[in-house]
Structures are given as structure tokens and as C-alpha cells.
Length: 159
Image (cartoon, rainbow, N blue to C red; front, side):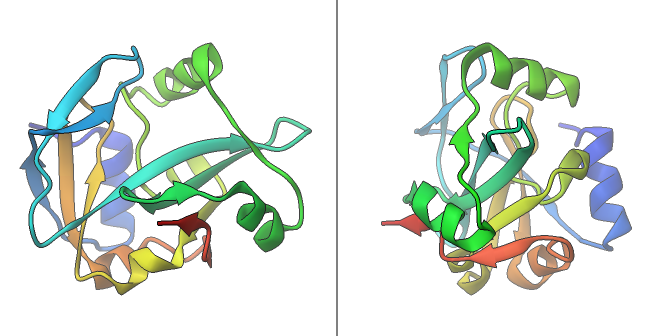
């Protein structure tokens, strides 16, 4: 497995060390509406990525814990304007424009403004999709925090 160049560059820029993980057994949606399987490592929290846009079409990446639901009202409260999910062909087009096959839970990738759920900062290890099949990287909590320099952190999910 190789990490896409755009992600590798972001990790190097922030001096983030990581390990590679290929996972299987828990469903993860893919761009083509198929379902791939992953088995979440027992000690790591998997992060989900959500692509949102405001009424002017400006995009935002929201990152939440896998076992939660994104709360759009909380995103609106944190950022001062409403956002809605980007879905279907618009989502596919955006993902493919990054040279990826799936959405990536990588803060500020593609210079996207990013909002991160505060619960992710309370975990010791995180699994982040690299946008290729069921491949992930595993980073420790402190390394993940290095990636958040331009991100907003807020409580944006519900269990």
C-alpha cells in the first residue's frame, strides 16, 4: 500500500509519523456506493469525513468519530452559517479531483477549511482513511493535533 502523494505531503509538512493499516469487517461507504469492509483496531478510533457546502457553494470538511452522527445544527452554531452535505455526483467529482477513490478524514487536505469534532482529540490513536480502497493510516492523538493548525475544533457530533 502507498499513501497518495497529497496526503504524504501534508503528513510530512506537519512532521506526523504514522503506520499503515489495511482493515476489514466493518462497512465503510465508497464513492461508487459499494461497501468495503474494515475491522477497526481495538485501540484506535476511526474518523469519518463529511464534505459539506454552504449556500454559496463553499466547501467544508467535517471530521467526526465513526460511531457518531454529524450534527449540522452544531456545525452552524460553531461556524455561524448553515451547511448541507455534498452527495452523489458532486461528491464523486470532488473526490476524484483530489486523485482519490473515497473521502479522506485528513484535516485541510486540498486547502479545505476543516471542522473537527472535539471527541477525536480525546483519543490516543486514530485511523484515517487515505482515500484508497480500505487503506488507512494510524496516527497517535498528539500527531493528529499537529494537523489541526488551521482547523476549527468543536462538539459537532451526537452518539
